[in-house]
Image 1 (spheres, rainbow, N blue to C red):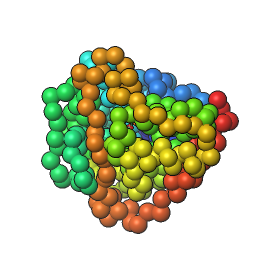
Image 2 (tube, rainbow, N blue to C red; image 1 turned 60 degrees about the horizontal axis):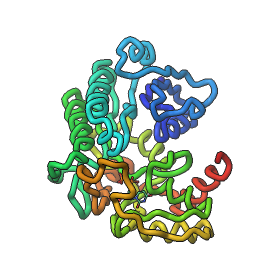
Image 3 (cartoon, rainbow, N blue to C red; image 1 turned 120 degrees about the vertical axis):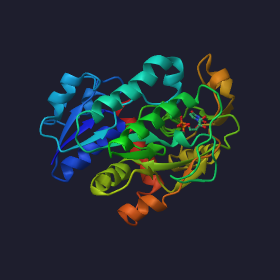
Length: 302
Ligand code: UDP
């Protein structure tokens, strides 16, 4: 099947492209290379290095495609806070233009939409925000979900996807990089914040399985739930690193101006009941393998 992947040169998109090729599909990429990289595109794959808000380029790229994975997006809270108008518009407008193609597909939302909720996060649960600007990212993504729902698209709430080739802007990739280089591992604040990690290669398999399933919104995440401090200790020990683990206050960790608009998520754990009812019992890669494979790539390319 010919399948369009917006953001296909990015971290998740490129792993999805590899999975689809392995399964005998014909993926086509459209990516404006804002965070994606040309080197992530496998040889022979049709790629359009254009912005998916450009409807002509999008139409061109989507010719003959029967399904769309809409991964192209401004990613991460900090980016949105640094340039809110551009980022919020980008998230909403790109979703709008992809939906206008009239092809079935999947939109990518985020676990951020759960806001300040803690405990197991369930698709049907209430969403809780404060008026801090941090939540502008979550609310923009939520509009994407509503737009998608209005045309019968599926939405995926992604939870901390990690693994080889992720840029250093995230706790997992940053700690692995720091541990490989015996640099201090930077735990922000108390390190009691909790996250649940899933390997990007497992994510790609799950996303492919979900293509022909019936649902409106589903959590996609993993089973490895840890506090940031526990995670720092695990990375250090798995990689046999000499790194010291240090505490960094939030106002030193994030860029200037972030303090007033920042509020961290205390804990993020996906309820995977709905996911597993759709894809069956999924056998996840071990967390140790994810750490080691990520480290190996860091060593090779840095
Ligand atoms: N974090 C950290 N050290 C780092 C990078 C991030 O302690 O070098 C913390 C961050 O404050 C947050 C958690 O790790 O509590 C996860 O951050 P990330 O940016 O990976 O993603 P988030 O889950 O917040 O979207």
